[in-house]
Length: 127
Image (tube, rainbow, N blue to C red; front, side):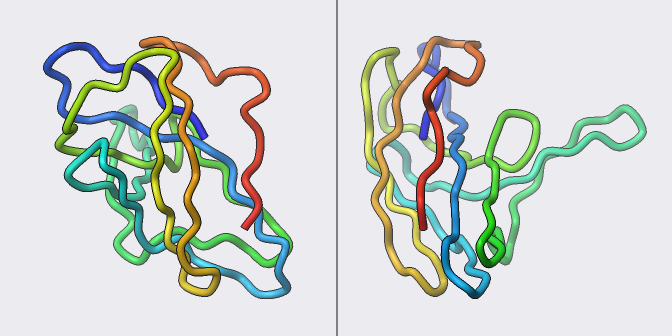
């Protein structure tokens, strides 16, 4: 899991990771919590007719049986909103992902450079 550092005054940060479901049934990411922000949500970004839109996935994000869900810039991602502090490059912070079937799973987000691309070696998180 990773995020980008945020400039002073920023109110939101994105979160990215790949979630693997090694179980024989689909599961669903239903909520996220972290002390870095007042709230966090799963969002989808899309471009339609040249206009980029972002929306909360009200029913969470399904992770298919024996499959994975990619949360990356420009697609599905986490939004940390109402930041309690600015994530700084080189730091880490924890977040708890809660799944419908697997329950809570705590992961650690690495904070990369502002505007940086996905870092090498930031791979999958098994569910």
